[in-house]
Length: 319
Image (cartoon, rainbow, N blue to C red; front, side, top):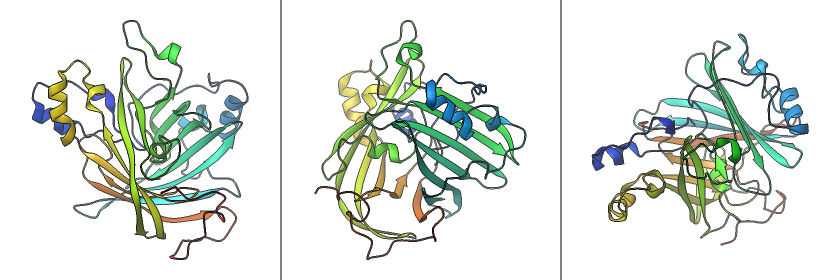
């Protein structure tokens, strides 16, 4: 699930060209190259120490030789495996192994992405459990185990704000997010829920995506058959072009492309399927859950008789 690089944006006079460029769909993967942090980080305290010890920040992530198995999930953690294919050709774009780990009062979402050839990516997002947004993000691209590009981002409103720039929202994400971030936009995942996801566009601006849950559907993917919540995400054009006339934005907004996502309707709310584009100018793609398993336990897939919400430790999504 590759990222949109929002920093390449320019405001073009042609509305047709502008609408074509507005395919801004975040996902894991490539972002703008930035200087990677050293062994020490400004994350702070016990969380900083945990991330360094875990190998998620520091020089170990950008060494000359790093294997795609250098970061592995601990025992007892569920790993979700997805595959993304290009709709027109059916070619596999990428395969992703994703899981969550807990540190203090935060969730660390980790993704290891296998690309064609010998390239792979490792990325993580640090999510606070009791509020929206992202605290830390790092992504690294490797080729034959050698780091090629790396991006580090930290949400610090006081530091991110530049002279003359508008205030950034506190519930900010970097320009790349995993699909699960769209579900986090809701106070409660349920039919009819609405929310917003804010991503930093440039040092001076951000883009908002309107996120809404429409209805429950039965979805079948390689991992099994599930009751799913359908989620629609669309860029709010007014946050991209705040100085444009409202009547022009009103005309453009309906034709902005949408991303459609399906999440399991009961905890742990796995991503089941995604349909749309995943980066600027990219092709239409489909992402599907191939399988999921708990580390240290036999691999398992769901079927039509999937366990109840209570068995999964939570209540089903309200209808």
